[in-house]
Image (cartoon, rainbow, N blue to C red):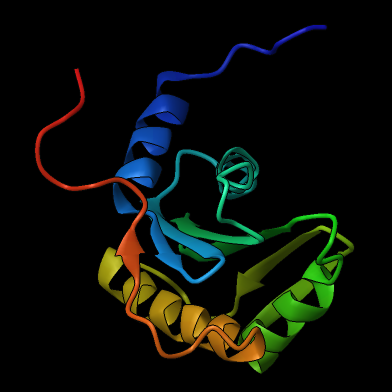
Length: 148
C-alpha cells in the first residue's frame, strides 16, 4: 500500500482539529478555520470518523474566501448527502451520497468569526435533523495538561 506524503499544514490542521473537535451526542463537529487547501475538511472528517462514539462527523473550514464542509457517516447511517443538503439548505451548494457529502457555502468568508457563526448554525441544524438536541457539547480531548 502506498501512503502519499502530506505537508506540514496537514499536521497543523490535524492538531487544530483534535483540540477543537466537539462531541454532540453521536456527532463530532470541528471547525478548522483557515485551510491550507479545500480538501483538508474531507481528510480530517475521514480521520475523525473512527472515534468510538461517532456516527457522523461534520468538518468545516475556509479557503480563499469560501467555506467548505465535509460530512462523513458510518455505513449504518448511509444518508450523508441527504443530511448535508438539509443542514445547508439554500445557504450553499451541497451534495453527496451514502457515507460522504460535501458543500460550499455561498457566503464569502473573510474571517474566522464569519465561519464560526455559520458553523454554529450548521451544527444546530445537524443536531436537529438527527435528534441530538438537548445535551451540551463536550470536547473530544480533555483540556488541560497534554498527555506524555
